[in-house]
Length: 286
Image (cartoon, rainbow, N blue to C red):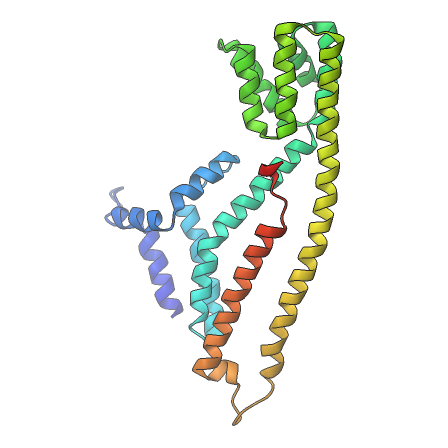
């Protein structure tokens, strides 16, 4: 079984000496069937550059690990769970990284925005104030956000369009309000009321961040309970394995037992996925 898997991997990734690959059409069709194009687009949106080959390798590694486990316990049905895991794993990793990047960006916003507000009265110019704020900011993600704005202005975009593009990169509702106030102040003047509105918008972002941290702590506790329950569920087949029937292990040596273990694996993957989906904070809704 392991040899078959190894030959399958070699078949997929083998390169021809003349620089052409006669299996390229088959690989493309296989990659398309696994939605690798979608995974690539999602990965690129968070700054990761995954080729289809690298994504296929990640999937194959999961399948090979499942293959080794199936050999170790003589249960070929485990391969089904391995295939499901392999297909789901890239999407899970990309989504976790995307949420991590987004949370990091949001958490680092407020201090630079405070600096920006304090620089606007002196500069009386949003672009110049953002440039000064960028130079005083130590976080590279925020620096890049401001640098992109300045670059857009340099190539001829209006202040409004450049600010809206910045808004679309952050995608936070309270930051959207901040940008709206900033655009309004740009056209109507940096009056005391305009500066007060900007300050209130930053306070709203800070309030959201405190709420996010509270929800994250609650989510962490709920996840811990869920995964503890999941681990407890796995104790049943483990304990019952020691109850031999006719000097055989029902979970290792009977077809019904092997299928049951496969269902346990698939059920665990489903519970884990749904647990992450329902208990993780959805930053897109904030």
